[in-house]
Length: 341
Image 1: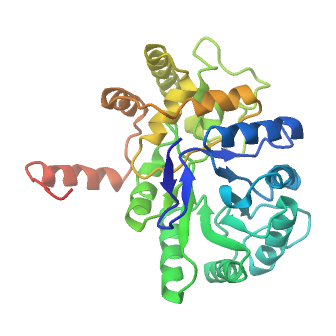
Image 2: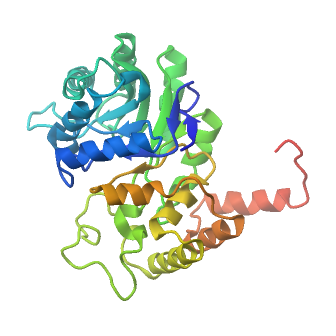
């Protein structure tokens, strides 16, 4: 397992982050503890959870494991935003909710501090200044070391970065965006922005909710009862559902997997690890076998030719103005030489 800096911070995290959304849902406590042990044994040190996951059960189970570890050896990230109750203030990124939920998260995790605390989604109802100042205050209180956001648009992320600089607040060091071979719009602005600003990129759903595991194929689509194919899934975008593009990508993943003696999941994750600016994809697992398979994505690299094959098949036509800018940037740079790039 290799390690990468968490944005412009000096903290190093494993190139794979273990997402614990399944803890207390797809994996009972015994299975979850075994997977956490295995992940650390494989060199992983980075765990991600949320106060929303399984009504806090994910944090509680991760906390029961954390009490058996040396706290300094691992990097623990959690998130807040989504509803955790029925009250009028039980959702959002307000000062009131942040100050309440950080203490609940720390109690469930059984730790004095979080390494990374993230706003789980953009809050259109709360002034961004309120959110960022409250987050800065939890850092000043010693409850959090670093701050991040998730599911922010490029303009929202840039505004957050600029406000922290203007006010001298704790900086944004990471972004959790959805990113995979099926969801590549992240590349239009978010990835370049994060590279320019030194923000770590922690992609969620790197296997597109299960589509890129190779389990589903043209002649074996997801059954109606499968969570993968349901149209009512909150995180299921049109480009993730069954389409000719999806099956072309899956077909090529299976071809490369056979050539490399790997699995489709490992190929899809390795492609993501090779993308400029990506720090650590967040993987999940319900069983130890699934975790072991996903960890097989590290320690080797796809060739440039294999990357190009997957890039071409998964490319999404650029909308305006990205297509216009790209066309004329290429035209202008056609005969130029940039020795420093």
